[in-house]
Length: 388
Image (cartoon, rainbow, N blue to C red; front, side, top):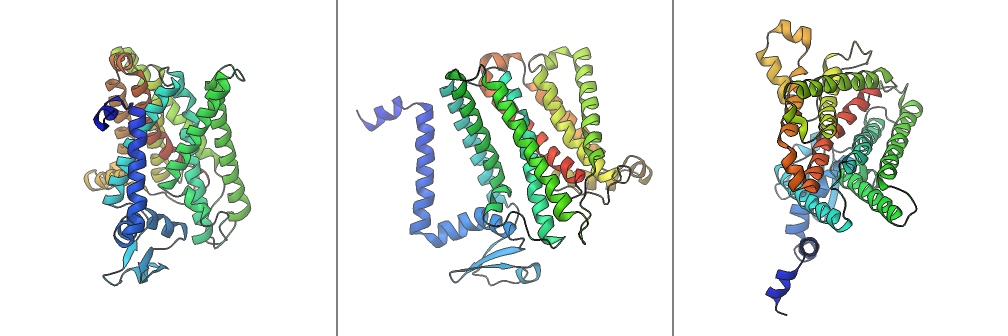
């Protein structure tokens, strides 16, 4: 059989695996053969270097003359032109790389679900909800770890290299791997007759991961951070209660209004649409309460957004609304409106026809869309709950 004939008979899943192996070979081979160009000035500078610097709470990491240095902000300001510098956070190159990786991995998950004959039922979506909360909570473990080292002057509970696993963007791959492993294990138990249904097993496992993670944060805050000079870390459960109650009431009201006035908008997604609306509403509510109503909630300080979109909306509100409006309502509330409108648009786009033609693809996309709202929202809510 010719190479062309083999390529034509290659299944999409095998083609994906072949592309993955080829990309890995190019990166590994290029890093070995052209180390300075491929590894130092691409892989390390834009992907691993920022994580390495963040894991050590450095302003930047510098490769020069075969050595790697961790520097503070003053030293990072003036560096030789030939130095390879990596700073914590994202760059245009890294964001493009992660976006391509996300699309590629979603395609791989789609092929895997086809092989396992999963993902066509809406129960699959609901089974994964706890993992969205879990991902956001795990990000707060990193926040607590950084507070311990940089603010409270306490030794980190999780040190390098283990703490690299909970630093963005590595943490997203970690949560993805945990979710995938749990799903595959639950499906195998189901098909071997050990359990009656994989859905409650996956949901229950995600809930356990979430509870253990929150319990760990509580332990770190109350035993290592609370009362330490330089930090206001503590336990403020009223934040979680307020965010959850308001998010639930707002999402139920909006979803109910849609069902009453425009039933066709929510006909395709059904209760999935309500969950998507709740996830993005929670993100908006958590930002509004932490930024504008922190004193009412009894928090020791005000929170500022970590994401550019939030910051842009707050800055735009401050610049264009009158002082009386900002003083009365705050400046973060337009972000909540944006999140609600965006969620409604998603619910409207996923009509009944999409679920009939490509149910697996539609559900997988909705899982990703929910994660974009519920994950960051959970992180903001828990950061405020523990004042870190």
